[in-house]
Image (cartoon, rainbow, N blue to C red; front, side, top):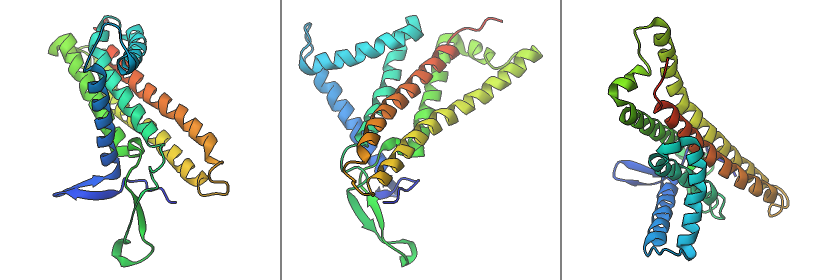
Length: 247
């Protein structure tokens, strides 16, 4: 089975094409919303069942965030946590049976050649558009928080100065902000897309039900690590940019 680098279109809403990764991202968002609503619908002082599990997830991640963000934890935690759980669920959902295998055959372009298989579902982070969008949202929120904590003047002082040396350093900081988007998006995309290719390749060989098993365990680890890296890097960027500089 050939893995397309670009996400495949499955239908359109008016002039807007809907790809399989967009469709899957809707499913991920829906699952997270339903989980959050169900877990917090009847909150009790002694947590049970789903509330207990939800509190365990939040408190575990809160301890990690507070060790980096300090007194800014209450503001940063919802943002960083949303990134982590969205990316993690998207990575793990892509490992379920049916992802990449259930779909339809599309006639080839120009009417020549073999029909192209288009899966209905695909791991959201195997699409560079998704990871780039996540990175851009991370960047925008980080700079918004920087203005909120430092004020507009303090924010501009991070990048501009009458001192030639600090002005040059500020220019390098602007370049680094651009490279952050590339770093966050390509790291996540590269690891998840590579895993998708490895699993598809292993599943087409002999003993297709046995050979992919070790790779699935590896992808479980990679999916968690990549979600954690994206979230923690976003958190670190937030902490750095919202901290007042001292020359």
